[in-house]
Amino acid sequence: MAVVGLVVGGAWLYSDSRHQIFGFRPAAGIEPESTKAFTQALHRRDPAGMRAQVTSNCVADQNSSLCFAKSDDQHFATAMANDTIEVTFLGRYEERSGTVAVYDVAINNKTTGNKQDVVLILRLDKSGKIDHALVS
Image (tube, rainbow, N blue to C red; front, side, top):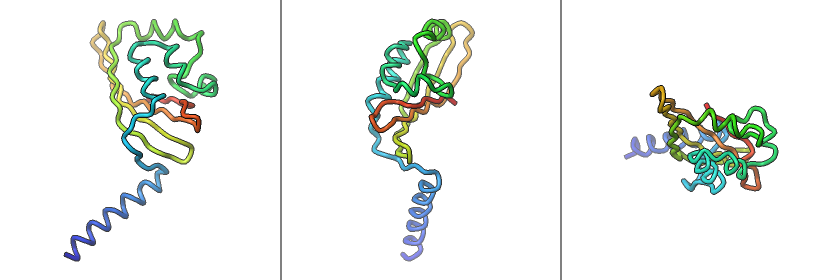
């Protein structure tokens, strides 16, 4: 019995310290409303709908993969014209600077048959709007 307690206790400590080291903790599995609306707009290829969910800082952030201004809408439409997109919510995490939502995005090019699977990370500021979007 003591061995079982030691194993369970060690696993709990490892799990707890791992989250402290990496700086985030899993939160309730509820998808944030702004990220849900953002990914639904992405699925529809609606950059105006995506932009409605982000802060002005995100639009101005050159490092954010999917935060862009109206002037980029045509480029976005052209780039995504032959693709189908499937977005799956993976989880929500609380970190030092706010909430992070993580998605799996499968992009299939109908013309070439190429398939790409990427991770979409959306960070929310204190207002609940997306202030950074990163595709890896």
